[in-house]
Image 1 (cartoon, rainbow, N blue to C red):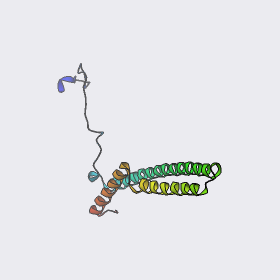
Image 2: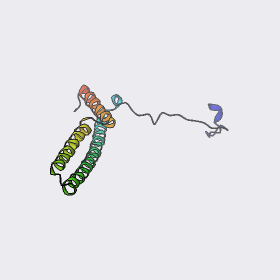
Image 3: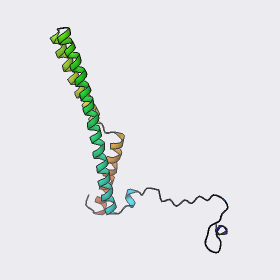
Length: 134
């Protein structure tokens, strides 16, 4: 509103003014240039790599828990109870449980991974359509 500006160009509204310039709206991938898409692809690839490293850390922790608990229970039955068959069964079951948990954890992508993979696929398709290097 022009009535809020004086002749020197200074603003004096006498009240709060909210200026919305839409500068924080994210840009759609289709609106990006090829160089911006390459930068975005590298960024999302790094995010995906970091997420997978975190997933490996969680998996390694799970393996350690299974190994410690399974070994402790097996050693208890082997040395305290003297039952070697039961200790072998417990170690075998702990190994099977760790394997099943590993496959389940690693087979399904997390929601974050799925979103990054979808964005990477979209970037590749846009670059392919434009004749850029997918």
